Amino acid sequence: MPITYEPIATQTLGSTAATVTFSSIPSTYTDLVLVTNYIATSLGNTVNMTFNSDTASNYSRTYIGAWAAPTASSGTTRFTSRNNISCFWQVGAASTTTPNPMIYNIMNYSNTTTYKTVLSRFNTMAATLSEVSAEIGLWRTNSAINRIDLTSSATTFAIGSTFTLYGIKAA
Amino acid sequence: MPILGIFASSQFVIPPVSYESIATTTVGGGGTASITFSSIPSTYTHLQIRGILQSARPTFSRDEYKITINSDTGTNYSSHNIIGDGSSLGANSETSRAYILSQDTVGSNGWWGATIVDFLDYKNTNKNKTVRILAGLDTNGAGVSGANGAMTFSSGLWQNTSAITSITFTASTGNWNQYSQLALYGIKG
Image (cartoon, rainbow over all chains, first blue to last red; front, side, top):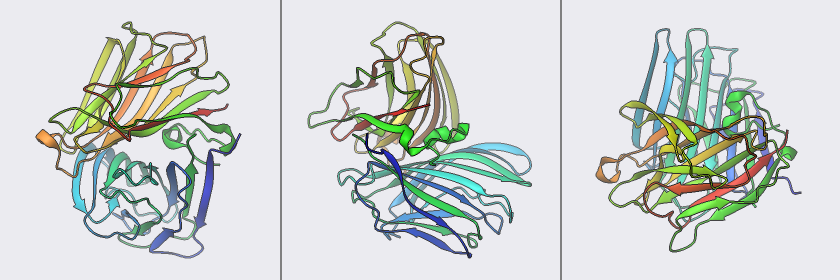
């Protein structure tokens, strides 16, 4: 039985970085799963995702989540015509030790017939700020995805942050 | 070892060799009324279905889908949905229905929905079957008839202890459009 779910590349930061890139992504899978567990060094950091170096306003997303900062609240927000798929602003609370797990499911990334959709789950668990959220992201392009850039909006990703890209291959 | 989709929220960690592709359906030109996976082998512990969906619903950009199991069309299903449409939060409960409902997760009129569905302990004959869904669609705020994107968490119940051997996905309105695709995977315990 061939392996269906396999790692493509992993990056563990040995020094801080503003951007993490996965390039030359093979087109041999059906979906991609990007698992990150990054550490931010400033409050209010977000992680911005772009595909194929496209920084035009071809992205949008719909958010749902709940957070405590420290008062508990919840909400949903729509972001249209953006130049990236970003996680919501709470993710990346200031902590030099607490990572922020994020999982992106990049669906049917290699087809050239449909826009690309991303199902994501985010968590933040810092002492003064916590969040559980999910998003559906859209890249309004039919191109196959061959490059992913993750950029830290307010600061850099800290040493020890991890980013792993997996491929899932359908029969 | 990868952390798999929405299983990650349950702390499930899945070795790559435990995740296998069983079957994939891609809708051809002309569309189809339903997508069915049948003769599902009983050699796994959980099932996962992943894919993108678009229906032929007219004059609206958002649709929903229904899941039936083992061709059971009795009122043996229930489901709950928590939905964020970008402007308001909502939730609903569907009890004693003939299907599990995933609400506001299918695209139409050019837009695409994405879905990941987990069927837990699908072959265990000692308990009813539960389903979890992470799904949504986004329209860049340009949805037809004001139907924009939505992000949805869903849970489903099939009140039957039989092993699951077939699963059918049906759009609430119209056929599945061309290029809609669902892929079935098995996860070994």
